[in-house]
Length: 69
Image (cartoon, helix red, strand yellow):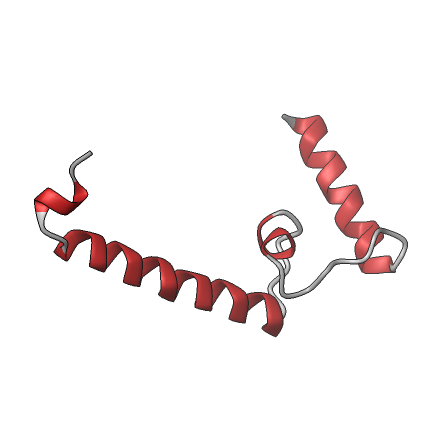
């Protein structure tokens, strides 16, 4: 576990120094994997969660005969 943490910290340090692979901002991978919290990535997460919650609400309101396999 400690080795994974060290690798992650080294990668973040390289990214901050500009020596790592560039982050594709506004993507799920940047938000989740690279833990980027820039405006683009935060907007993506916000939009995704709004859509997810809407799907969950629609699913909860659907009649049981429509959701049964």
